[in-house]
Image 1 (tube, helix red, strand yellow):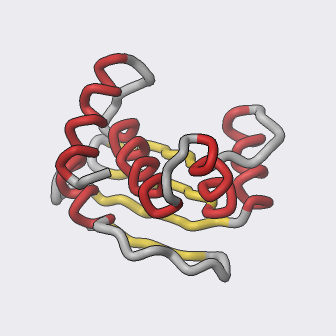
Image 2 (cartoon, rainbow, N blue to C red):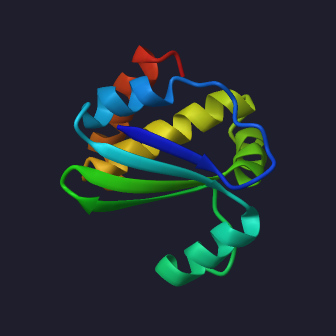
Amino acid sequence: MLSISNTTKAKLPRLAFSNIKNSVLGKKYELSLAIVSAAHMKKLNRMYRNINKPTDILSFPLSKNEGEMYICLTETKKEAKKFDRTYENFLAFLFIHGCVHLKGFDHSSTMERIERRFRKKFGV
């Protein structure tokens, strides 16, 4: 199950969030995705990572089959330009990245290989 809450006024692009989530984490995994403001993301980043600035994405596993993810669309738009990707493409890229983290992987060549497989599957 995937629940999405947008706490901002920004319009969330139509992406295959549910299909990506099911493909990476499985249909039984319960994921809560919150779209939050830069101010809210800065607060979360400071609280959990001791970094006093907003970031584009944070993901938190709650159990083996449950997690939550926070995405800041304003930060996502800024980062997309740095990576020479469209906003929608980078948002899908981030969502895949967050899901792979929730699956238990940390930044590594293994994680990158897994992400590549899902990016290819979803044309990201």
